[in-house]
Length: 103
Image 1 (cartoon, helix red, strand yellow):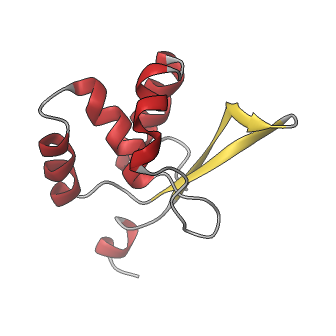
Image 2 (cartoon, one colour):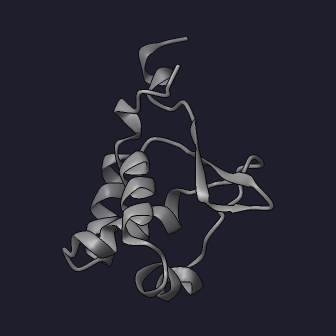
């Protein structure tokens, strides 16, 4: 396996606050690419808060590789979700390349 293959590894992390029945939600994410980063900032009109929400919508996957959130969830994430949890989840997704939980 070459160096570029290591850059594509999927990370995972638990979000207790978004889980159900005492089980944390497990989010999987591929590292954010430069092209995706550029697109996120364009979508968010340079608002750091919106970048976090768009990162979650764009990159949060379930165990089967399916997106957990859609654009329909944007308002809920912006207006009803705890800002600390959103920031933590987005930080893990946006910083996936340096996440300490990566093997």
